[in-house]
Amino acid sequence: MTDSETTRIAALEREAEKLRKINAALMSRVERSTDQQLNAFSLFETAIALDQQVRDRTQQLKQALQSLEKTNGRLLQAKQQAEAASSLKSSVLVSVTHDLLQPLNAARLTLSALTEMATEPKSVALTDQIDRSLATLEDMLRTLLDISKLDAGVLRPEFGPVAIASLFEPLEQEFVATAAKRNLDFRIMPSSAVVRSDPLMLRRILQNLLANALRYTQRGTVLMGCRLKGDDICIEVHDTGPGIPEAQREAIFVEFQRGDAGAGDKAGIGLGLSIVRRFADLLGHNIRLSSRAGKGSVFSVTVPRTLDPVAIPVREQASVDYRYGGMEGAKILLIENDLSSAEGLAHLLEKWGCDVAVTISKTEALERIHALDGIPDAIIADLHLDNGETGIQAVDVIRGEINAKVPAIIVTADYSAKAASDVSAFGHELLKKPIKPAEMRSLLSFLLAAEQSNARL
Image 1 (cartoon, rainbow, N blue to C red):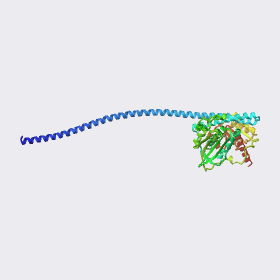
Image 2 (cartoon, rainbow, N blue to C red):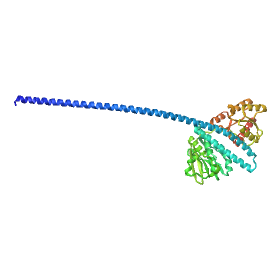
Image 3 (tube, helix red, strand yellow):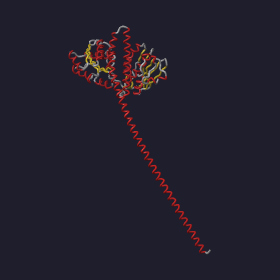
Image 4 (tube, rainbow, N blue to C red):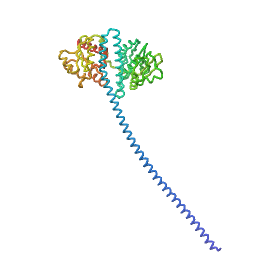
C-alpha cells in the first residue's frame, strides 16, 4: 500500500471517528430530550390526576359543610326548644308554687289561731301533727322554687359582707321549737365573724343543713358553730344521728336521694342537700362531710372571711322590746285579695287584741278609712292584688290620702329578687308567705312600739 493510500485511510478513519462522536453526542441529546418529554408528560398526567382529586375532595368538603350546617340548624332549633321548655317549666312552676303558697298560708294562719284555742292534749297533738305536715309541704314548695330558679339561671349571687350572727340568731329562733319537740339538745354557738357571701343563699345552705340534721337525729345533739381555718371560716353542723355510709356520701347530694329511712316519717324527699351543693357551687364555697356509722355526721361549708364593715339594720339598733305586748287595741288595715288568707290573718290579729279592718283593694281600703274616720296604726298589704294593683301602690296612695306615714308590712308568696327589691325601695317591711305567726307578731309589735315612741317625741 502506497503512502498516499495510507494517508487517505488515516484521514478517513479520523473522519469516521469524528462522525461517531458527533453521532454519539446527537443520540445522547435525543435521549435526554425524550426523557424530558416523557417526564413532562408524566408530570402533566399527575397534575391532571391531582386536580381531579382536589375537585373530589372539595365536593366532599362542601357536602360535609352543608350537612354540618343542617345539623347545627337542628341543634340550634333543639336548643331553642329546650330553652323555651325550661323557661315555660320554670315560669309554670313559679306560678304554681305561688298559687299553692296562698292556701298554705291561710292554713298555717288558721292553724295558729286554732292552736291557741286547743287545750286538750289530744287536740294539741293533732294540731302539732298538722303543723308538721304543713311545714313539710312548705319546705318542699320552697325547695322546688329554688330548683326552678337554678335551672332557669335566674339566680345570681350578690356578694357582700355578711355577719354570721345575723344568720345564726334567726335560724336558732326558727329551729328551737322543732328541736324541743323532739327532745334534742339544740345549740348554735355565737360568732362575731364576718364573711363574704350572698346572705340569702348562705342562709338557705345553713337552713337546709340544720333541717337535715334535725330530721335524721333521733336522740342527742345538733350543734352549729364556726371554726377558724386560715383566711376562711368553716361553719359546721354536728349531729348525733345514724351517720352516713361511705358509699352514700356523694349520692345524698343528688336530687331525690336521701339517707336511711330509719327516721320514719321524718325522712325528706331528697332535695335539701342537693340545694346545698348547688348553692355552694354557685357561691364558690366548699362543702365537706365527715361521718361515722352510729355516731353522727358533720357537714361544713367554708366561707372566706372579710374585714369589710357590715351595715346594721335599723331594727337591730332599736332598744325597744318588741317581742310581746303593744298590740292591744291597735287598728290594723289589712289589704288582701285572697279571702282565706285574709280571714286567717285577721283572726290571728284579733286574738292578739288588734282591731282589724279587712279589705281587698286600695279603693275599698280608702272607703273603710273614710267611713271609720280614723287613721290605722299599721297597714298589712299583699304585694300582688287584683287587676294589676300592688300593695306598694295601695300603701303609697293611702299614706298620701291620710297625710301620715303609717308603718306598712308587705306580705307575698313571690320569692323573686325583684319583689324584695321593690318592697325595700319603698322602705316597707317584707314577710314571705306562708307567714310565721311569731315573726309577724314580733315585727308588728316592733313597728307599733316604734311608732308610739316617735309620736311621744
